[in-house]
Length: 151
Image (cartoon, rainbow, N blue to C red):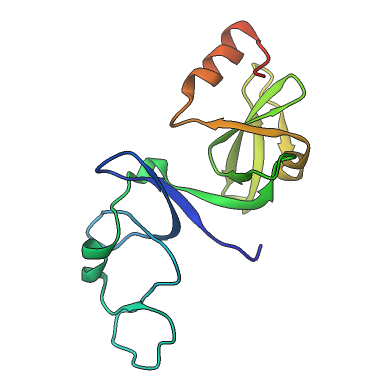
């Protein structure tokens, strides 16, 4: 995976932001966009915009809700939409959620039906990202209760 990035919902207005995930010791979470890097000590040799201490982050970048932060899988669906952790994916008539497996250090697709089947993340290429669990939880309920196909 050559493009490591995250997304999260801004705490102040609910908009999605994309970039690097930064969580300082104070318990807050930030998404740092662009080519900015965070350094603990000043580095005059830095060739990209730098924030030299994490205290500067709160002045320049939005705080995000930690539960909404998800990592980019490195893959796109069949419509070339990026797949992020906690996205809802439709493959044929089935609905899955992109999850992270900590034990195996990989993404996978978790079925939302009662069978709780699992697919490898490479199956995302055959599916369509139709939403995410934070903005579209109703997609999961529709599939679970009525076994409907989302189109």
